[in-house]
Length: 269
Ligand code: NAP
Image 1 (cartoon, helix red, strand yellow):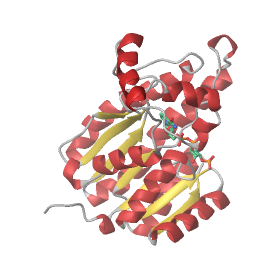
Image 2 (cartoon, protein in one colour):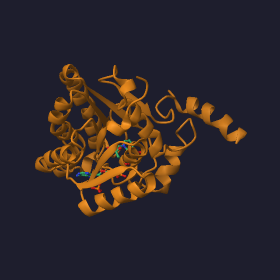
Image 3 (cartoon, protein in one colour):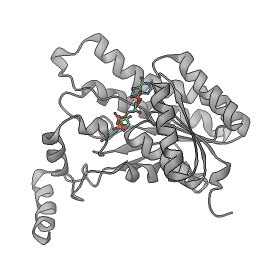
């Protein structure tokens, strides 16, 4: 058969109240999947779900889930299965990226970033695993980052560690879950226009846009389409892999190489 029967798919999207996660939830809803999106605040999650139902005509529920609390993550999986009967796709997307120079970083700062980004991703997969096992198939798509796996950034060393850590987890999980018909892959976004990125300020956004060969910041839909591909039936033979969505930001090997890319575009524009 050609094409994924999206209307048969049940999708959990963590961190779906804003930004990339909201974009992922919206795309799956437009395709007809049943979506459960989460954020820490139940009221906000439900409001966003209602907005997406109005915008897409799809099936979207919202649930309050704190990824730092294992019981809350377990409840997320139980609720998704209760509402939709099964879980086919988990988008472990929620993450935080507080800036903190290493010199000022406390143990609590490190714990917070690792708890949400790394431990939260692992807990989410573990919680959804029994439902996927029962379904006899599954797709896990982690939202990692170029920061950590591919690049580094001053002020985000703990964040980079959490995002690189996700890929260590990804490879072990991909092997462990392959016999169950469950694939585990990750998207590595570059700089994508979200509320979280906007909070870093205009100066940051301008500098980042200037370092992207394709000449613009990413949109949440750019990431959502890559996630949907990795979650599709067509991606059945792909596991343990990463897909970078960064407008070519990590490609130039020097500032010269970047300048040579951007100047002709600026002239023709
Ligand atoms: P965002 O706009 O700040 O949204 C973050 C989402 O995570 C929100 O829905 C938030 O929900 C949720 N969240 C935060 N802490 C949580 C917790 N303890 N428990 C449950 N949910 C929590 O971020 P974004 O820019 O869309 O980023 C989404 C993911 O993409 C992150 O993993 C980030 O590292 C990654 N990423 C982003 C970029 C980028 O340029 N934007 C680049 C590379 C990677 P509530 O606030 O409602 O709880």
